[in-house]
Length: 240
Image (cartoon, rainbow, N blue to C red; front, side):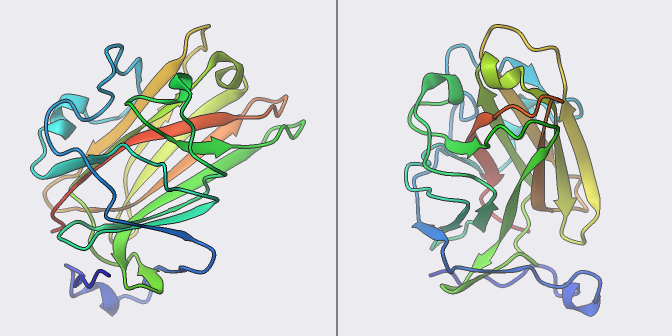
């Protein structure tokens, strides 16, 4: 169980930015999963990252951030809501919008093991599937996203030609602890016959921390099914 004090004592003073509370009901809670803390932690496959989202901080810069650790094992994730609870100095993480068990197919991975599945049904017309990653504190019954922001965060989204060709754009928004947009990153490159490993990441300015990441994956007009694997979720160990 994690009891972390929010690093910003002034947050409660603004009614505009109320604490985010997520009930653990029907959420999978993963306690102290293994993380990678050194070496080539993001997309360590020999083929590495194939595409970098526009506006992303360079992977090498993110990996050079002090205290950066990377979650590569999503084998305990299940369903659309997952909470990662760390008993030590790392921020807890809430992930909502995933849609089922992890994927192990290499086309959806950027590191060995498992990735978190993002999957939709074919809908016949344009739609957007959204997923949110929040950094905060979990007390055993609820998740508070008003504190414990991180200095740097990133991840990969990986897929195969069938689903890439059914995607019109991916947009990722990094939000600060005050609710302001720190970075908007996008990918809308022409799809090819090869698998893609797309990197998104941000090292925040010294005056900011990253509280939340929103991922929007938009389908093409055909509204075909989408499957992506989110892998190599990176974040700094020590919140400000």
